[in-house]
Length: 59
Image 1 (spheres, rainbow, N blue to C red):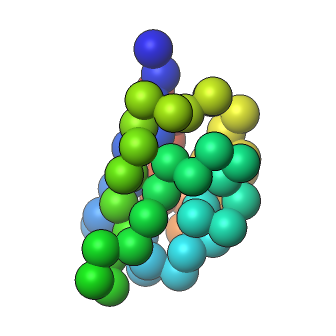
Image 2: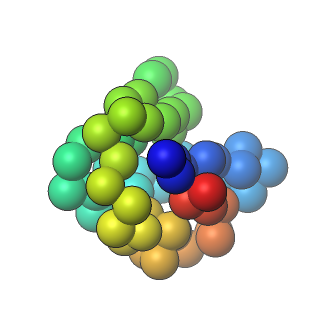
């Protein structure tokens, strides 16, 4: 099963992935965006397509 991975070298924790994800896979922990519920991912790739820094890959 594919799930999203965040490249923290590129991620600016802008929150775009949190806003576009239809099943709330992402969340903020402090100032950092994390993959909170990877098992809920439906592989729609909205996060991957929307990330302005290209910091997310679904694999």
